[in-house]
Length: 235
Image (tube, rainbow, N blue to C red):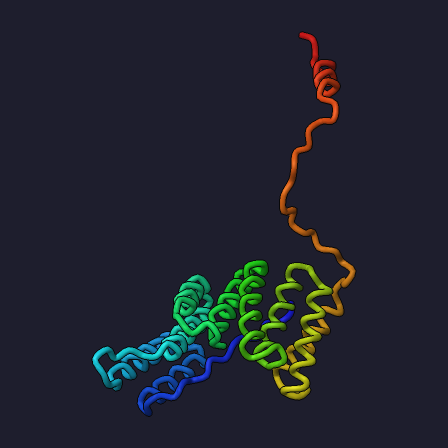
């Protein structure tokens, strides 16, 4: 199957002690020590709140979003997809300005989680929402938008919509070739996805879901009743 591209959550500017805890969490996550990674993220959030000045001592929305997304990615890495979805939904509820590009992160996370659950239709919906946000905030010819196009292609492929999948993969590859170069890891992923879809049957027509049905009345109701009477067996 083609490979989706996971989102990267960049560490926000933070105090030195908080920064050290976040870096430790990322190291533990890379070696799949999930418990220690979660503990370090929790400690980093609490330590940051302690170092704040003012009566409320609340983190900014973007900072809270970073922690929620990072914890969700740990759950997803463990295979606890249901817990990851709950965490991504918490991230989605964080109120950012309507034109903030980080609004797309939660939708990308949900798309990734449902893709892991083998629910490409739901995954497609979330990635389409992320696409709309990124195209309106950072533009469609950017690396982050290209990652969403790649993941849309993966969903299309899983739904046997192969021609649409190929179109998204080729668009992704064009963006990555221009922005990252041919040897970048993401460029290699997009190229492999094109090779996979080229081996598929591009002329295959998927079975589209029937949206509704109507019961048409018989053009001659009397004739219909006669046929029913003739069909009855005598006792």
